[in-house]
Image 1 (cartoon, rainbow, N blue to C red):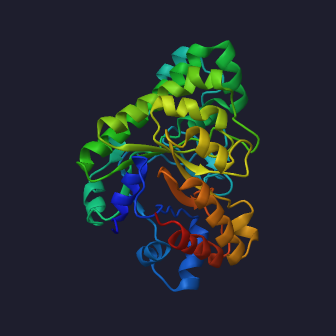
Image 2 (cartoon, helix red, strand yellow):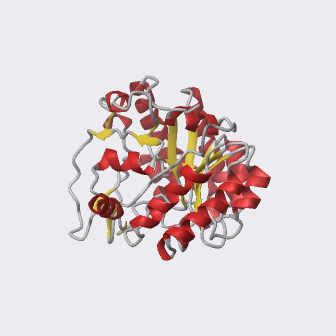
Image 3 (cartoon, one colour):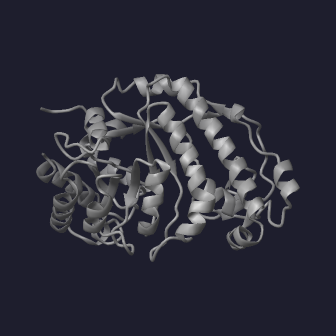
Length: 349
């Protein structure tokens, strides 16, 4: 029996086998424009062509208009960090570098009143319950802390001034929790998944050990996960890199799914992840976008996708997609088509 995309995803989240493995399609703006041009399709028809089982809604911004202070700035975060460079860039300054505990508390933290969630429900309802709808604030509190303190200082103060680090994370997550709750209340049951993102891993392993993670970061993930669950939502976290050692802590925190599994990173081999954690957390990704999708051929991509599906699909709990949400512009469109065609061919239960 054919399920709707929403039913398919929620079945996988329940660690049961749907009609086929759900599909996730995330891409950079540059790749998306290239794919639209090569395939002659508009946005929604392209998503349908790829078979994407997800849709996403975003709240707007209705807060103060802060002028940029640096001519090289390309972006300003809601926490007052200006950034320069490619894309969202890198922080120009670290506003809370060297700040005392009192100065952290006195910092002009943003208000959830700046979040305009008025159109979230109507946007979600446009898909008429066909797709699994993602919502909530991205909540990258780890990255924001690095922006505000600087990474080296953040790490050092975990040992030397843990109360300052805890205050920083608490203020950040206070904002994100209130922002997301504003969205969930406005959505009134029209979204299915709370989607958050923090990159805790590198190519060779976690950016910090399990002990520090449990002390400083896990409690805030738990807070966000409980918020999503209180509204009846599954909670999926984007997290790049090799984070195998942290997965038990993700599970304890209440994270239901991790996106997007990068098999080229240490410890992230699909077979090991499926064996050790596959009954307790949903895995999203695992089709290597580092080498296979960029350097392969449609046939090699098809074969690689088939191999991953054979490992990951038994028992549900798997969503097929690239190993990073942002499929890069240099990725051949036909390789991405081959990946999703392989799911249709080999992903049925």
